[in-house]
Amino acid sequence: MPRLAGGADPGVAAGQAAGRQAPARGPRGPVGRPPWREALPPLALLLATGILSALPDATLGPATRAPAAVVAAGGAAWLLRRAAPGRSGQAAGRAAELARREAETARDEAEAALRTSEERLRLAQEAAGIGVWERDIASGRALFWSPEQFRLFGLPPGPAPLSREAFLALVVEEDRRRMRFERLGQDAAGSGGTLLFRNEFRIRRADDGTVRWLLGLGRVLPGPDGRAGRVVGVNLDITERREAEERQKLLTRELDHRAKNMLAVVQAVLRLTPRDDPAAFVRMVEGRIAALARAHSLLAEGQWTGARLRALLQAELAPFIASGRSVAIEGPDLAVPPAAAQPLSMAMHELATNAVKYGALSIPQGRLAIGWRAAEASLIIEWVESGCRGIAPAPARTGFGTRVIGSTIRLQLGGSVEKQWTPEGLRCTITLPLERVQAGGAPD
Image (cartoon, rainbow, N blue to C red):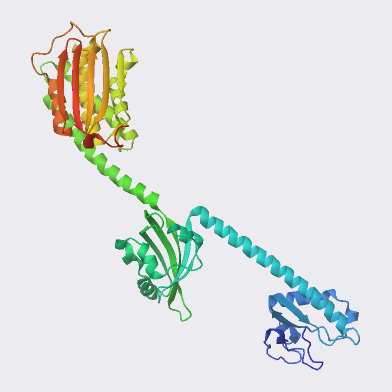
């Protein structure tokens, strides 16, 4: 432990152990304040005062309670000057040891608190998927990347952040112009040296090549000269949010398009439905609009991404299924897009209406089987009625319902309709281009 020369002025802070020397003071310093107090930083002064208070006055000579302090190597060493003869070594040693232990305890507690704080911050960043970074504006050089920042870009955490060139190589080309940190410096200069910024851009992950949307938030901070010197910020993965926003936009456009189509279909139904029997006219119009409404409800449940073909058929035939009629619906799982769901619903409604009037659904023993399958690039739907022997021959002319089915399938879906009247009943085969009626993948 460094010792002061016996005649040294008590206002000198012995900084020899740390390679520093405090400015010399007068014998008393400020009025009413011992000069040694001026040589100590606040925390050291507090500890020194406590140490001196704990020492018996008898161990020290008068006017000898003036310590000078050296703060070095993360701990405090205390020098007591001019102790009473024969006891100076003992007093100084006790004070120095006590101060050393206090300093080590304080240092250990501070280091533990720092480790806890860093761990808490790391866990929060990992849980939220937040990458932290720092970049020099003038050179564009990255100064720091957190482990989570590496993971956002599909990279293992490394000892050094990516270079500017390596970073820009992972940014989608059309978004690279947003990475001009020099412009941030210019903007910050115009705002007085600091600037908050927000940026959304796409990257292509290094590990699997997937494109992800990132949100960058940060602040431009001034350097030593007062100018914008560095950028400190965070990145968050917002891919799911951007995809949801895009789906919302598509949904809004689809709803607008569907609403206009619905009105056009209603107008066509009103125009084409025979009006010689007002009561029959009302029933037919109500039935066809109800069929469109059922398809609309199924599409809404699927957020207008499509409707399951099985659910569409079950909705049209629900009254007959509930009444115990023999209705079988069999086929692989298939989702049809909105553009195909409403025409198919209308066609199934017309077939069901004719079956109620003239076919299998008009008699207790009648049976109806509906199935579908994929054949090369086509979807084939078969409507087969049986148990109708002797109730109705093939119609002599093409009715309105048949015309609706034909025009709906051919004009709106690019398909074809083939009808065969057998002794057992109607067999109707509808062939559609698979690409026009497939929303959720090919049938299993």
